Image (cartoon, rainbow, N blue to C red; front, side, top):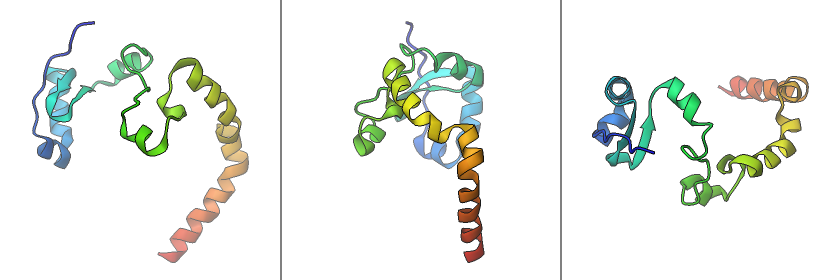
Length: 118
């Protein structure tokens, strides 16, 4: 796989307002390695949609990532069969139908209580 071009940016400027930089990246280097972030940024939706499904390009397995360090290796940091096995186990409790029929009223009550306290 070819290496993406390098795109230099100032992390402070990027942190304060990333949108102009991301717009420039989409025009100049939509997929680029950014040394200041030590990361490859993919800035176009269609590229993200295509590449996120390719485990050899975009793997959720990040053993040294902050999420893994804080929460341990979990479903969000697994690919393929390992991810699917955990997803199948949890899906019945978070499916759109379950959220609508079971969780919606609880969320509405909690939201109303918070808003009442404001």
